[in-house]
Image (tube, rainbow, N blue to C red; front, side, top):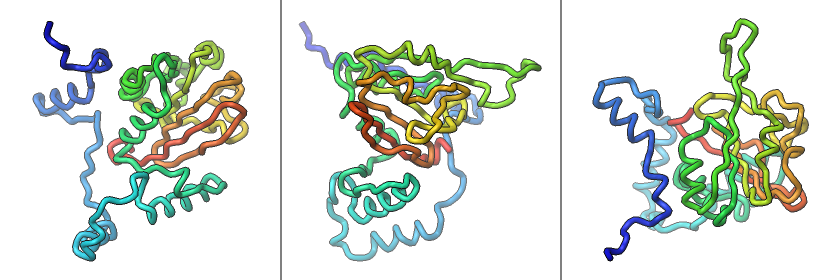
Length: 251
C-alpha cells in the first residue's frame, strides 16, 4: 500500500477563503475588500533606519537571539509595560514573531494539546479553527447574536452581542482556551473591557469574563488589533496571554 504523503492533521484545513477570494477578485477585476493593500510608502525614518542597517557595520547581519533582538524586546517591554501599568521582563515576557500569523501559530502549538477544547467566538478570523485543529485541539463555537434596534436596522457593530449564558455553557473539563479578537474580524465589534480591567464585559453582558471562566480554566488568548489590553497574569490555576499586534492588512 502506498504510504500517505500528506499528514492527517491537514485533512480538515485544506480550504482557505483568502485564496478563493483573491483569485475571484483577480479574475473578475473586482475590488478586493478581503485583505488590506497599503497604498502609501513607509515613513522616511523607517526607510532611513533600514538603509543604515544594511549599509553600516556588516557584522550586524548575523543571527540574533531567537526570541527577539534584545534592543527591540527592551523597547517593546518598556512601551507595553507603560500601557499595561506593570513591569514586563524583556527576556521572559516578550516574543517577537514573523507577523500575527506567526504569533498565533506559535501560541496554539505551544499551549493546545491533543483533545483540548478551544472556544472561538463567531464570526471569527479564518485561522483560529485550522490552527486549533493543527495542534490536535477541538474548536468549540459560540456566536455573537444580532440585536437590531427598535427600527430593526443594524446601526453599528455593537448591535452584535454575546450571550453570557451560552458562553458559560461551552466550558467543560476539556476547555483549554478562549479566543477573543477585538476589534472583531470581520464585524469590527470592539470589546470594551477585558478581564484585567474591572468591570470587564463582553458586549452588554453584566458578567465579568472572569466570572464566566470556571475555576481550573487554564488560558485566555486575546488578539488585539494594535494595542494589548491584558498581559500574562495568574488567577489561581488559570493564566492569560495577550497578543498585541499591528497588521497593516487588518487595520
